[in-house]
Structures are given as structure tokens and as C-alpha cells.
Image 1: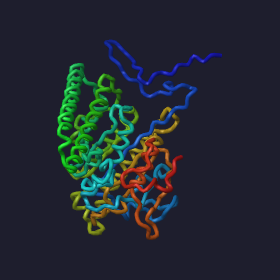
Image 2: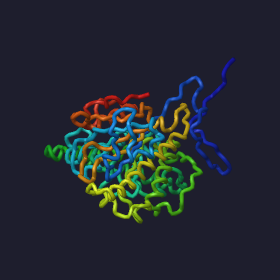
Image 3: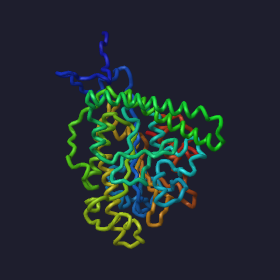
Image 4: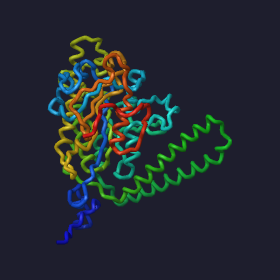
Length: 428
């Protein structure tokens, strides 16, 4: 018997009266029954500006039978879905100023010594994803600050995070009007023309420059090329309808306290991954904002609490903030785990979800032995791995990032300061 099954194109639209079109979600029928469904891998990272108290984050025991530390208790029910790492860092200092290099490991002043500058792991992944999604990456910031922009391009520029949930919602789900699309097309064309013009003019005097100026001009050209690629990719998606959602965004969402706004950011991140609007995201946290973030029991400023001086009462108050962040991350993982993908995996199985900070103890301004947790993504989890045990030196955190990038599909042998992939981290 001849099988007349024809897979549905992922770009199929449901058209209604008046020409209104709605994009279909990802369905099993979009793949041939004779062809294995390919997993779509994603990468997200959450960065906390003031770190996590080491003695409440890192387990004392190594392996699977560790006792869950206080800050990780909200994640206890997901124990087999994540790995805790100790003994990983970037071998840099700088205290608070070092936290912005959480995903890169290379301070700006050292970036010239690296072929790709101080590009962060998310932006390296975004280059690989390219135009496969509407947004190669999204950088988000919930009550963040300028000094905690953790996404870096290869020309040592930080990506300003989206700080208003309403703006993120519009990017994901609100379609432009016909007039807005025309205006955007003109803006893209104008911007492309300007980029061509300035690059052409710069090349006319390139031969007259010193070595130092030539290096600066090369960096400039890199920046221009990045802008060109972004313009081209954005233009390709301009006429494609965005997905729809029944998610209701609260009208006061942009003025919500940290406690409530954090949940909305994670909700929108889940939707962004589920609709394949992007496969790479970062979310940074720093300030508590008004009313101490709405967190019950917190009556003192976050920065003040982070310099607790080992005073028990102060540490207990700080633990409320840090436990809030781990509990919200646990809620995010629960959401990802509840969503089934066409390949039979959950969205969590297909998403590498990193949680941590570029600072370990804010009390001592330490950037060593960072608090790092990786969930999902198709790795074998359920352990506490300690890489600096028994007097050994810490291991480059970039080794973990190299493993993540390779798992995403990048054919790399090195990423920034990496000395190899991370030993002991295995795919399922």
C-alpha cells in the first residue's frame, strides 16, 4: 500500500476572513513519519550580580549523595535534572566589576589578546543559530544595572538588555501594522546604505594608518559587519507573522516589584523558547528595586546585605533574596519540563539552562569558585562535581562553556580561556 502522507510545512499559516494569518505551533505532523525528528537545542543563562553565599550554595559532599544546601532546597524536587559545580571560575578578580564577565571570562582590557575579543558564550551560540529564528538571541535584565550587562559581542560591546516585560512581549507576539512594516523596510535599507558608505570611506585611508590604528579599524570593521548581519537577518523576518499566545500580560507589568516581575520574565522566556522565536537568552539580576523587591523579611538594601560580615542575622536576610532567585529558577525549570516537544523530549531536555554568577562571595569581593548550576539540555545530571578538591587549582569555567557550545552543535576546539571540554560532563 502506498503511503500518501505529506508532512506539513512549518511555515504553514491558518488564514481566516480578511486575510488574517496565524502561524501554526510546532507539530509532529510537520515531520515525515519516515524521518527521525531532530531535536532543537537551546541555551539560556541567568546571572545574579551579587553572587550567592558559598557556604549555602556549594554542597560539602561530592557525587550523587550530597546533602542539599539551603539555597538549593527550592530545586530539591528537580535533583536529577541539574548538576552543581564547584571549583570553576575565570581566574580573574575585580569584585563587582568582574561579574559582567560571567559568560565571557575575559575583561575588556584583555580582549585584544583573543581572536574573538571577549565574546560571551550566549553570543557565540547566537552566531551559530543565526537567522534560523526571528531573534538569534535575546538579552534581558530584570531590575538590572548598567554594570551587569553580561552579553558581549566579539568586538567587546555589551548588549543592552530588554528591561521592560511589555517590550519583550511586543517583540515576541505583536505584529507591526502595514505602515510600520514599510517604515521598517525603509529604515533597514537606509541603515544598510550607511554601513556600506562608512565602510567604503574608511578603506580609502586604511593604508596610511599605524599598526595600532589598523587594529582599531579592524575592530571597527568587525562591528560594522556585525551590524550588517543583524540588519539582513531582521529584514528576512519582517513579513513573517509572529506566533500568537493566550498569555495575559498584566497592565502594570513594567512597574511591578521584583518578586512579581521575575515570574513574568521567566514566563515570557518559556514562551519564546516554546514558539522558537529564539534559542538563546540571558537574564540578569542586580537591584531589588522599590519596596525591597516585595520580598517578605527583607528590610535592608541588597548591597548592604551582601557585605554581611558573617553576622548571622544579616546572612539570614540575604538568604531570603538568594533563595528567591533559586526558587524562581526552579519554577522556570518546572515550566520547561512540563512542555512536550515533537521529538519526545521535554523543553527542559532540549534546553541548557545555566544559573550562576561572576562573583562567589560579595562579602569578600571574591570572583573565585563561582556558584554554577546547569540544568537540562540532554546531559547526565544529579551530581555535585568539585574540580578544585584536594588542593587542586580551579578549572576554567570556559571549559563548561565549550562543552555547552559543542553540545549545541558548534564544531569548536576552544572557547575563550578554555583548556578543553569539562571532564565528567556527559550527554545522555
